Amino acid sequence: MILIGENIQILSKAVSEALAGRQARPLQELAGKQAEAGVHWIDLNIGPARKNPAETMSWPVNTIQEVVDLPLSLDTTNPVAMEAGLALCRRKALINSASGTKESKERMLPLAKKYNANVIISALNDTGIPSDAAARAESIMETIDYANGLGIPNEDIWVDPILMPVGVGQQDILEVVEFVRMLPDIAPDVKSTIGLSNVSNGAPRHLRHIINKVMMVVLEQAGLYSAIVDSFDRELIELNAGKKQDIISLIQKVINGEEIEIQTMSPVEKDYYKTARVIMGYDLYSPSWLEL
Amino acid sequence: MEKFMEKYPGEIRELRLGTEGKSAVAGGQNTLPFHFFEGRPGQLKLALEITDSEPYDWTLSLQEFYANVKSSPVDWARKSVDEYGAEMIFLNLNSMEKDLPAGEIAAGVKRVAAAVDVPLAVFGLGEKEKDAAVLPVVAAACSGRKLLLGPVLKENYQEIAAAALEHGHAVIAQSPMDINLAKDLNIRLGKFFPLDRVVIDPLTCAAGYGLEYAFSTMERIRLSAIAHDDKTLQSPIIARVGKEAWKTKEAMQDTGKGILWEALTAITLLLAGADIVTLRHPDSLRRVREMAC
Image (cartoon, rainbow over all chains, first blue to last red; front, side):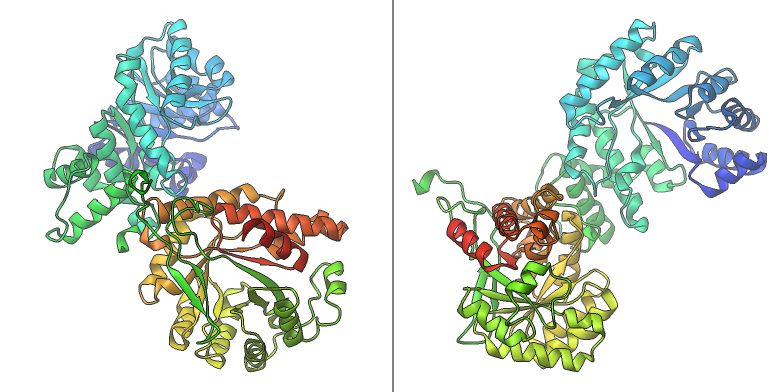
């Protein structure tokens, strides 16, 4: 799976200080370390960039491109900032993101055509986040249609069905998995992506990684093309690289509903097993799900 | 017919309250609320609320209604049972607001417990430190009476439940309208406390003030317990309706409306899965009983 590193984002104090103070070093270090960790894209989340939007994006784009050669995913809701960044990207960029809202369709999508960029289209529309797989498909197909009309080819479109936190919408997880599974049939050549870490938002901090990892494997098995992830979760990167086959096959068994002998499992395997059962909706989530 | 019925895998643990000879039961069902046609229904308990000192924060019409008994918790409790038919007394420890010594508060609870033959629930302020200081003293003073003590929260369950365990009481486990957090608290309690002595309080709202959220939370807790056999959630549920109903604008304007508001909210939550409802007016208790029992 293609991994997009999420660690340059405005909600991080170090990042927001570096952006505000135009300190190149911390940003370049973060970008360099993510590249070393093995992700394939660098996400650059500068928030809504209300003041000086063009400069707020162009400065970090140039700064990061000085030290890494990875393609950039430009992450802002501000089309002026987005355009300023796209104009500077050396490699074909990724717009993160457009959606089915009227404003986004009219202001963000044309930029993908103009700058020959990839674009993430999320399931969001003017009525909110759709509730199930079919409603997500309906919303996204409509936006894809609109994008095609602008001359954006399917190969440049990455769709994001939007993953909710497990503590907010556990049943929603399976809808997202189902959507990912059906995507090749309804929109050939369109790619998929997901904001992976959102699934563990609100969960105890020290337990977020295992939720993220299991969720990634489940979505990968469903055919997910890419995910926006924590670059510094080393085990997650390793899992994605096909290491730890025993863990992957354990999760596969839970996905397939196979009988599993749990007495002989190691504590680590038990944790993955319990988490996979929660992700697959067999057990109701609670913050102490590993303690049962 | 039996052959064609699909049985649910889960059932609600039976909660026993009160001392030998005057004990009562709540819960115990293996089916969904009011599904009499397909299983063993649960035992409902309709409780009347009282306070252990003057109910200054109750709406004026209720204070007037209880004028003769409101300064004597013992008389109030007796009247609620003998005259109004309460199946349980829900005693709010509002004297804790005045920071009376815990021993004095506990002695008052003991007098009420001795005065009535129905189970007694004793409810603190919901302030984690004050409750953790007072409820264990109540638990010790009423040792062996099998009270229902609460609320226990994520922040103070260890202190209060430990005292309840030692002295043979049950507890009300309260979480903020969230099925995942209700499960979390029961998992934590279950490590040292028997889950057949836990009642879940997922919080509630009155009709027109967010009842949908309370309904949906209770309904999902009950479905998880019965239909999905989630063993951590197989506890009776309490809906504390009285307080919510009588602070609505409608109830404060007009007693008749208040009674309807309280009864309607209670019936709605019984449909969602509540096993114990607390009420403040005997007329709403009568209406709920006519409809539900």
